[in-house]
Amino acid sequence: MAKREVDILILSDIHLGTYGCHARELLQYLKTIKPKAVVLNGDIIDVWQFSKRYWPSSHMMVVKHLIGLIAKEVPVYYIPGNHDEMLRKFKGFNLGSLKITNKLSLKVNNSRVWIFHGDVFDVVMQHSRWLAKLGAVGYDTLILINSFINWFSEKMGRGKISLSKRVKNSVKSAVKFINKFEDTVCNIAAENHYDYVICGHIHQPEIKHVVTEKGSVTYMNSGDWIENLTSLEYNKGEWTIYNYHNDPVAQAVDIEKKKQSKESAKALMDSLLMELNINNHFPNGATGLEAA
Image 1 (spheres, helix red, strand yellow):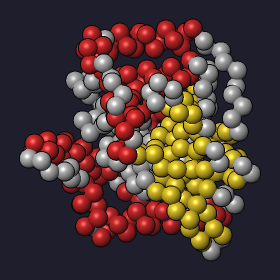
Image 2 (tube, one colour; image 1 turned 180 degrees about the vertical axis):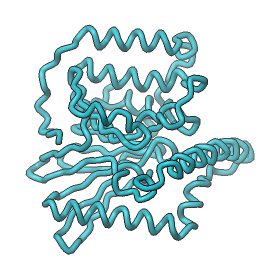
Image 3 (cartoon, one colour; image 1 turned 90 degrees about the horizontal axis):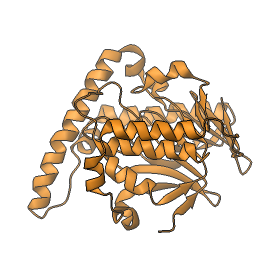
């Protein structure tokens, strides 16, 4: 199968290590594309809820695939989020074509693009971290319950529903938070003369033009791989939201279950470490990406 070329791929809020993570679907998607550069914009591995008892092979296979891109000298930038914030202390760390940074500044077609996770503008995160973690557990539980409900719903011939989306859309404070988050981000981006600002964190895929007192800016959010199963792609001079649910090609990719069951997490980890050791010094890729 010929892979679709993508100039820049932006993924966020995958939450590997949680029950709600759609790692298999993400792996199907990744196997259909050939990105020239990848930005992992936070909450890739959910350290908050990580458990040794739950780490399916599909989750490790996603990690292995990303490591494989690094082994092929594809520039990969990891911007830690709040759920994998422990990696922020490694800011500036380089391993081959992998770089950990807290934010990115890109210049694409003479436009300035600012990328960061977005939790810095979350008041709950800044002042009530314990409450944020409690909310994360509740959210993961709701997603788990939702999966059982959807299983029964599909058996009855009905479509899937999203409990968390219904909660978000019905609670005025949640809608107000999202709007305030977007407005704050856009105001700061415009004030710093950026043309585009890209976030994750709120699990709400979006591309929209916003006019602020400081000027206009295009706001984008890559969504998540818990509910929306989305990413941001830049290709042929255009930014678009990718949606797995609308991609029959990715959905048709066969992820060999036999291979998954035979390869233990340890075996997968050993193989990806071998890939890293093969090429531990890569030349910097000329992508126009500038880490800040």
